[in-house]
Length: 390
Picture 1 (cartoon, rainbow, N blue to C red):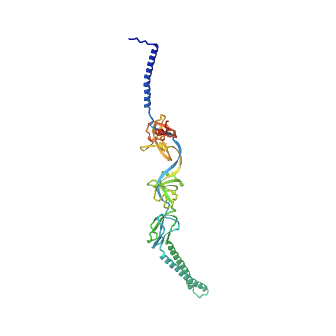
Picture 2: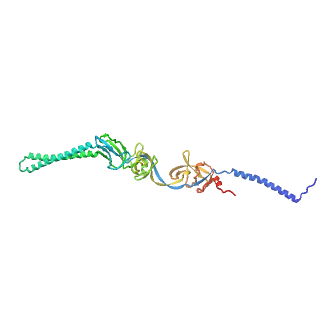
Picture 3: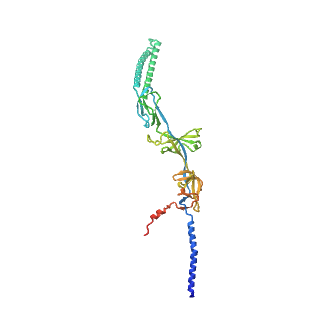
């Protein structure tokens, strides 16, 4: 067996290899530990944007409900008795003007009565002329003694009686002429016909209703307001009224009822609505409508609408903590203006809350906050848009 001779170079190389192996053995576990730590690091649940509440000036509104009704409704009836209705010139929904003929009754019998009354006037005038002549002769002979005092008195009385009969005949003629005028039913004011009960050919008595009319086509909203809210209202207050069909109109308070219903403890507020025309008017009498009275404006703390999360009937926001975790906070929401909602309590003006993505979070989630102006890019879309490597 040969003896191995170790030279100094051989010893040096062996020592170097031994040290290298020890270093690799020590480095490998450390590298694996770092990889395990990176794998165990928590990942954000969602990428969100955040913002602080803003101070906004919001309108003060008072909501109420009520019915739409005619401002004034006129009942148009027959003023003739026992006459036959021959013509009806209007129907429901027609717009009429003051003095327009709406219906016509038969005037044959009335014309005959008018002619008879005129003849009676002529007869009375003829009798009065004769009585006047006799009275004039009696006056001329009064001093001569040709006629007794009694005869002179009779002639003078006959003259006065004849003149009175003329006045009576003229009054009868005026009555018949008035009946002739009543054979035409005219509109007492301009407006819109809301109902019609007149039927051609019917014989009606005096006072029978023929039409109903909304005077001047004006409608009003009669809002029911509680007694405690009456102090905030005054004449001229602007009101936004919304009907059940979705139509909206802006009106003004015309009058506040002087009494309060003792049963409901509410009062009526009469709001004038602008005329919308006939037939195609957005509001109709009898509609149910809701409205909001504009009572001014006030400062309020608001947050974006998307920051409010409604769960189990309550409103919440998510506060962004310095450690990038979120905390769910219950808040009370108030007025709404466009895309912002008033927060009455629960957070302060300097609280940073999650705006976009709040609906997908839970209490304690870790999030990644980005600037609101920076769009959150989808990795798949980004890789698809990246240029291909040559």
